[in-house]
Every structure is written in structure tokens, then in C-alpha cells.
Image (cartoon, rainbow, N blue to C red):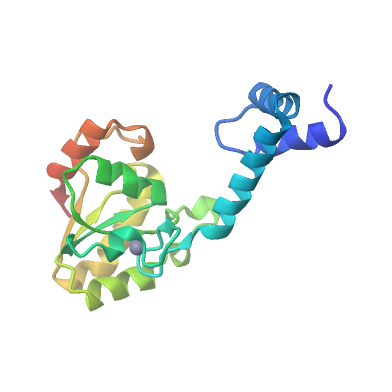
Length: 197
Ligand SMILES: [Zn+2]
């Protein structure tokens, strides 16, 4: 059995998404068994990444710079705004190559059972961005899960009188599915055939 610092290291890995007991043990043991410098370099890289990454002041995307490179890019279509849950979703959508507008990261989806309400999704900032920057179409690129549906219903109801087009991702996304595990092709199709709300 692991003990002391090795046990703590294993517990640290276990907190990461997708890492179970066995994998955590393997990673912890690998780090202390191999060339020490490799492990120390990795520790330094983790510290440096955490220290240097912040939220973009415009879109909330995690980025080394603020504004992030998506907000700073003046080649993008400023009239369309794609609303996503997480920073990773921005990359997934951009990789499809079918979207060239702006982004906004909510940071959460509304889920009353988990204590996540409307105040946790940066809605006032989203509303301000839509109004100030004269956005014409808002694409809600959220998971078709119950939290995603609740969030889309909330945003749509709040923006109903704004006379802007609001769309959501179309077919191809399984109900209860997750954008993160959807192929780039399926996501591109869902974006292209988005439905108006
Ligand atoms: Zn940004």
C-alpha cells in the first residue's frame, strides 16, 4: 500500500477527471521512479501554466493573454456570438472550421440541484456584450443535457425582447450527450444546421 507523500501524490492524481485509483497509483509511482528531472520539469510546467493563465476580460475564455486571441482577431465576424459552457468548447467549435464569429464562455450550466443558478453563468456580462457590440445572432452551443436545456431556456427568455436571432445546435447531437465527446464532423453539421429558438 502507498503511504506518506506517495499516498498524497496518488490522491492528488485521483482528483483529476478520468483518473481512477489504479491509474493514479501508476502515475504517482511513475513520477518518483523515473528520471527525477522529468518529474520536476512537469511540476514547473504545471505551476507556470496555472500562474500565467487568466480569464479573457471580454469572453471569459482561459487564455495567457487578455483579450484572448479570438477576441483580438479582427478578421472574425463581430455580428455573431457563439455561447459555450467551457473554454475547451471554443477550441472544439473553432476546429470544425465552419464558424468564424465571436465566443462567450459561461463557465457553468444552470443546475439547481447542484446549487448552480443563473448568477453563476456570467449572464450580465453576456447581455452587456450582446448590447454593446451589436451582436445580430447568438448561437447557444450547449450540451443537450438537462442543465444545457435549462440554461438555453433561461438565456432565451431573458433575450426574447432583444430582437436578435437566437439559434441552437441542430441534429446529430445525441440527447443527454456531451460536446466534448462529439466528433468534429458531427459538431460542424450541428453548427451548420442550427435551429432558431
Ligand atoms: Zn476573449
